[in-house]
Amino acid sequence: MLLAGKTVIVSGVGAGLGHRVAETVVRDGGRAVLGARTAANLAKSAAEIDPEG
Image 1: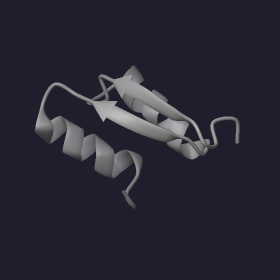
Image 2 (image 1 turned 90 degrees about the horizontal axis):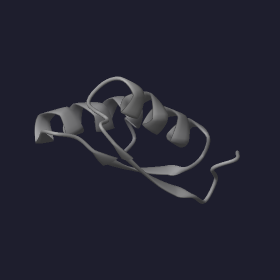
Image 3 (image 1 turned 60 degrees about the horizontal axis):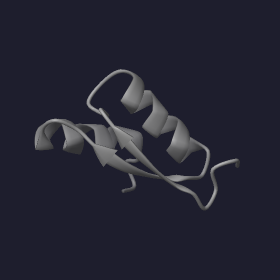
Image 4 (image 1 turned 90 degrees about the vertical axis):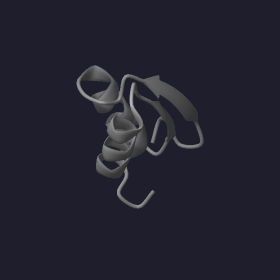
């Protein structure tokens, strides 16, 4: 758990690299602060990355 206790700001989470980076951060025990171009993309990605919130 390399990222346990760490917070990472990730932009461009709507698709592609940003989305994958955020998934990796959460999977490795960190917290991801997400940014996307639209609220709809942000909500969709947040639900996919961490369904528990």
